[in-house]
Length: 106
Image 1: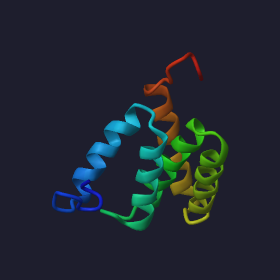
Image 2: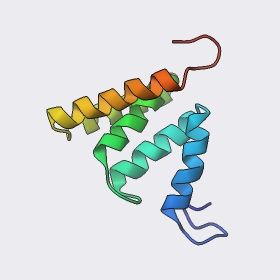
Image 3: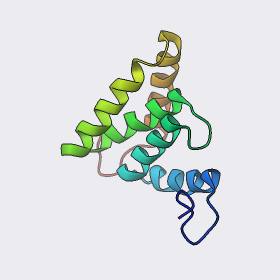
Image 4: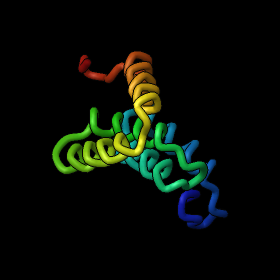
């Protein structure tokens, strides 16, 4: 609702807050939307954050969602300097450690 201003004033920061809550629960759509929002600059443009969210989406998705998230992640990786890419990969690893998946996955 906040992302598109449906029934409430458009507010990217508020939208990101709610998408983050869903992302922390492993919601693949929320992960992809956050990746896209950071890529497009809905709020601040941040390719490290975009790579991060698309990486998480790819690691949790399957089928077409996996393919789309992986393609986006790979496209963004080409936009990053080697240092920024390492930073993005580091924060992905840290998130994975602090947010174990339910159901015994690794």
